[in-house]
Structures are given as C-alpha cells and as structure tokens.
Length: 116
Image 1: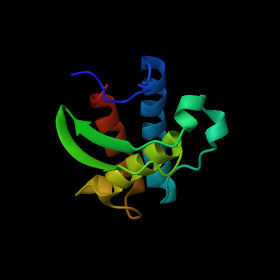
Image 2: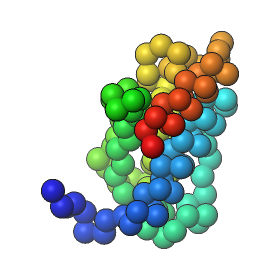
Image 3: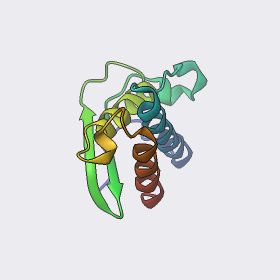
Image 4: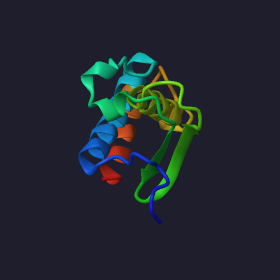
C-alpha cells in the first residue's frame, strides 16, 4: 500500500533514522534518558516537525511500540525519544533501568541485530 505521506522518506533517510533509534536506545539504557539531538545535524526532511511511530522487534516478533500522531517536534528528535520510551517500557531485562544496565544494553543490541 502506498504511503499517504506527501513527503515520504528515501531509503538512506530511513536507515539514518534506524541508526538513530538504535543509538538512542543504547544511550538511554546507559544514561536514563534519550540521546540529545540537534536537528541541524540531520538532513532537512528529518528536521521537519513530523509524527513518529517506533516499533521494536526481536526475531520478527513485536517487542514494543510507541508513537505520536502530533507533529510537535523534529522527526529526528521524535524518533530518538520514542525509541528510548519503547525500550524503557519493555517488560523484563530491557525495561529495567539501573541495576543491570550492561545486561539491558546487550539485550537491546540483540534485538537491534535481529531486526536488520
């Protein structure tokens, strides 16, 4: 089904957002907050205010998702924040912040690796 978006993202832009989501999850598990982002560091289309929805999969199974329909911040910031929120909300190891950060990061890396 074609995208209803008037300005769809190109594959390189999608890959950049995926890498950003992964980085934000790893950063968030270490620091307890999403990665700080400057929209001027990204292509203009990723700095536009847009809605965002992030899903986390492990071996093809949905592990978490979160999004926002309101376009109230740059897309790169929305994706970074939502990726962190989705990971933080996961039950079990990935959702626990603090006591076992290294284990949670390894779990996040396994999920990220299996979603390629």
